[in-house]
Length: 621
Image 1: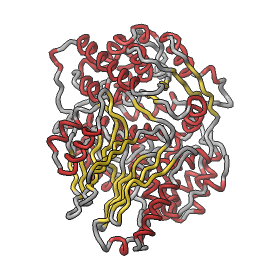
Image 2: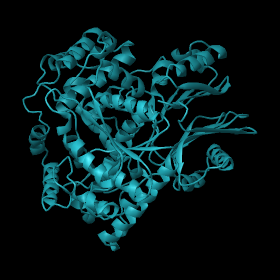
Image 3: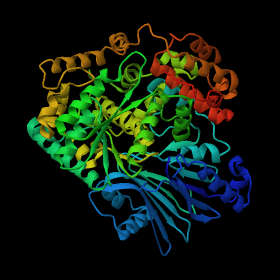
Image 4: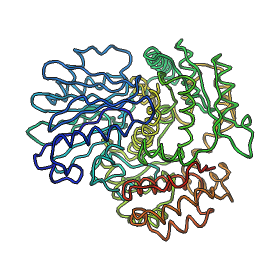
């Protein structure tokens, strides 16, 4: 990933004690640092730049020309702003002030500043005289940032590939792997690697030269209260729509050109309608997967997206994609290290095609976050206590494998998995289990998982979404649950942006929002959410996964990794993985893709190879 990478040594002995930097010569450390960030040039137009180089601290930048990094230097202060802040002009003096406040640890000031910023960003500040260093990020943690701290050595980077290649003592976190195979992602600040955390949104971390690192949250959401009970659904929808249009206009005015990702769902449709309602110029694109069995024009997503584009009178382009292959797997692993599953590998082809057609100086806009901000996320039934919530999350939110299968595959105990979920939930500021559940859906599925997915886009061009505009998000999170239930509020919100858009079918449910059937479908979804055993039966039928075998090439790859990579055999239960590889009916498509993501991530770290190179251009369907 493009971005800033920082290496700090807070202990004179750390260089000689760490396998990662066993060469104690500062020149050799600098060379190793520069060589490692240089290997993170993911496209031909990436460049690297060493912004600061002293014996105990090094700051490097990897980026393509349009990637937003701004650096100021004055007197003894170096400040880097990575990312974008919308709707305001950040002057050099403003940036200098933010850097100084971060270095001083002025938490109240930073709380006010971060809480007033609409954007996705990280600010890095260095006192070049003292060596004091600080970092502060946006409230959503929109730009994933990885932090390694051990024995006086610190690495802070947007590029987890740097960690995996620069540090010699990086190893796989078995619990992180188990969480990914259960939920589809690691929870909280956990990653796939031991001693590596992911920085949570609204964080301040400081590294004074004369003391150890200090970490604080200067902003934390609390989803335990709703403000706008006294406003009708119509008034709340009016306010939300106006805020959303402002978010679209701010993002559009900051862009050279805008491309909106348009699918057949409600979230991307709302984004396109918001951009159109704000008077912002954009084009829309939709990708469609080629299939041997289905003509590309017959896909519901494409059909609905085209109708939405016609309705909004916007230029629309369809990009047809062939199935992903091992090269796509390899690139996604290089970009995200397993934090984004191979189910998304095909989108890399989409991004490469977009770059060819539009260049890299575009803003790519998604509907990410819409499904977390606008609908009702409350549990289908009231949850009594934290223990019940933990059981509910493990049963209902286990979107990949069941708990029993994860235990069989990883050897991680049920108690360890449950304790990890319990610790996470108990760290939330909410006190009511129902509100904690909403917090889980937004923090983990939204900020944690989706931020990683959307960040993948930024390897090619800048990417954003108006649903994570802070003013809009604050507005819609204040809408009462009873107004959001069964997507009532969503329908009112979308109708404010474009009334006709509610008359188009939703590709996921095949009926429009204004249909009399739509509320019944939403109630049916609520029923399935409260009856996971029924959902487990219905969902495979809906996804056409009944009596289907996963692709034989995936089985070949899985078995080859098990056979050739010691790390895979050491981390996972060999007999169980072999059984899955031998029985292509034992997994659905999502499960096998997630499993191979994990085996590839494990092999990359523990064995130094992934077996992907042995299967050049092998396609997966």
